[in-house]
Length: 217
Image (cartoon, rainbow, N blue to C red; front, side, top):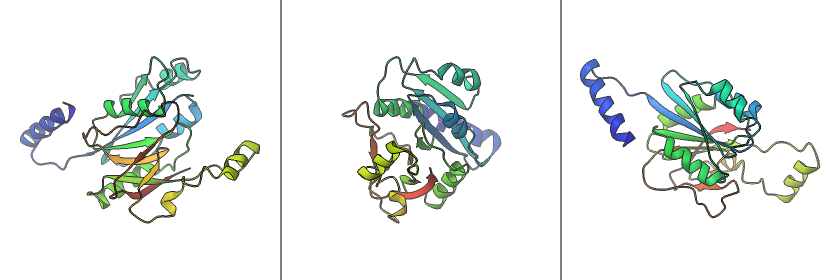
């Protein structure tokens, strides 16, 4: 429905204003359970090119999150930021699916609510999209925080973070990537995040056309 409406608007503008190159649209979907403002403020302040229309979609997965009121006070009336709140805790996968249902952009960038991306992440996203227009997905370079205490040291020793920086280990045909930093072309193909682990941070698998782009930490 939304794609059809967008097409009609483009056709109308082409007739009324003459031929114009379409503006690239990119939605940044952020599922957030903890609503930690330092992280969200940083993400919402990312730089972008004027040639790319950016919309931030924050899906709050805890209706009782401590930072929810502050988030709404600061950003609820910003036309480029949508804030949605789940009535109950659905988990990361279902929350990302709700974000996809909200989206009507050409591309979607998934960012977790506990990352500090490079300030030029969205600029690099546009650059890589134009460089590889036939690719349907790009795995961002993510780095797990350095060891600073017993908890982070245990995670490193357990080896569960080895796949975070997969984009630095494979040049192309990356089969999957962490959802902390993932860029995909939005295609209405019915593909969604699986709900078999509804309370965990799942990963989206990409076809072999996926390539690496961007960086996050």
